[in-house]
Length: 63
Image 1 (cartoon, rainbow, N blue to C red):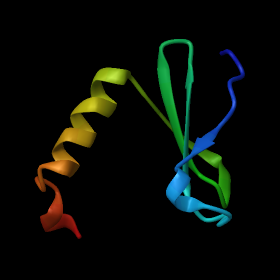
Image 2 (cartoon, rainbow, N blue to C red):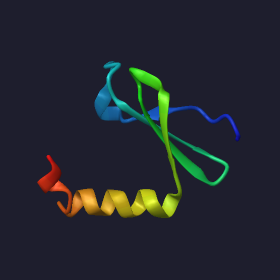
Image 3 (cartoon, rainbow, N blue to C red):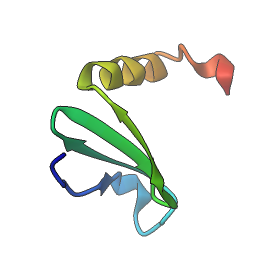
């Protein structure tokens, strides 16, 4: 895999506890900044479907 830099949301400001994301070789990787050893790897299509479901409130019943 290519070694691309992790990016975090600008909403996180100087906080260390946030979700970070990067792209590598046709995958999207997501991790929490305070637990960088645990990485979720997924395809762009699956990540897009997840974000759409979150924005549409389809997963709110899990909260």
